[in-house]
Length: 125
Length: 152
Image 1 (cartoon, rainbow over the protein chains, first blue to last red):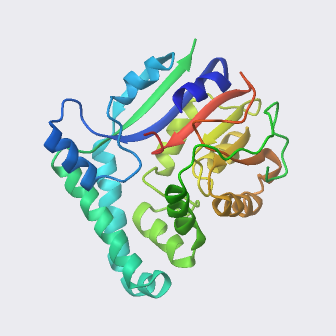
Image 2: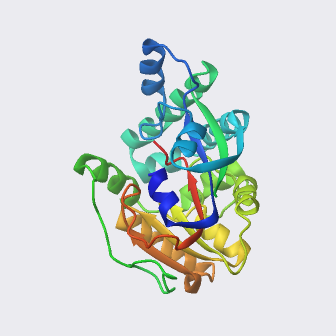
């Protein structure tokens, strides 16, 4: 995906975004635990900065924003609980419960330092 | 391709490749529900904003992305895995740049178009249904790429 981005960018163009990822150096058991707790589609095995460099980019910013990630996740969870009645009516009980569980698991992953979120900015030389 | 804007030098070929059926169905279910009034309330209550956002990227963080990408009215931006258009549509609105939203579920891109029209930026926007690993655009066609929690 990053290599494809590199190719479509003009020289000097930039890529920026947020990525949820696991910390480096997890044991196999920790990696399995992270996969259970994390959002299903966003776990990278290598640090995102390394993946950007491998794709040819020069990394300008690699900043851990896990604290903000946790605060946002907690705020969404609180809001969903506060609006439980309306959400159950809109989504149905099954989806409501699933969404609540997903957010709770993500928070658990953050608290166990198995899930992090980073801002990454890189340029194409 | 959906939307009113020119795709700005990009190859317009629609592409849907390397996509597992199960994965596509998952995203379809996510977006079929549409953006309800109560979803807007959740965003307002949780993040103090109502900008069609979803996921974990706040307006302040979107603004940080805009500055990092040095967006201007001359820029052409690709939002990769754009879903309903967050944060790409916001970046187009705040910077005046032209932007292309790219994702798999057509349902989400249609909702993004509706939202872009409501914000008055649909003339700056194009939308292309495509997989991020096989982007159907010409080499060197974009000034910037933005993504939010889609890398894997």
